[in-house]
Image (cartoon, rainbow, N blue to C red):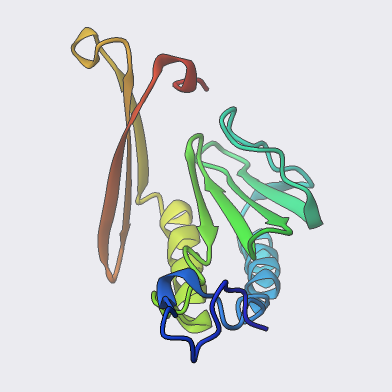
Length: 171
């Protein structure tokens, strides 16, 4: 089904405001469940049926129960939630949260295969210990904080930095 103010044949059609097939990413949920089951079988982790949202996140209504894997001997946790609004939300460590798909509009043209590969890459970066996150607070930031994430994998390294107001820089 098309979710747009304009049909595709309308001259006002905007591919970046249109989602032609909103269900094409639904299989990501099954892929995430299988991935978490594989990780649980391969590594010494504890499984809980929780997803602790960041303080700045809206409350998620879950389509399926959320899952969290915590390493038995320390390290970053992996959590996945299955809200009705997107296929899934992945939380890595304390602060990193991202949606899968990152965008479902026609203009971005992401595929299920691309997003499934990104999900696996993110999870294995955490498992391999190549995921890093840093929260820096200092007077030079005028009371705010800087949050940094780095994901390293065989396909390369991705990073991001975000400035946070003081009330959002919490554990």
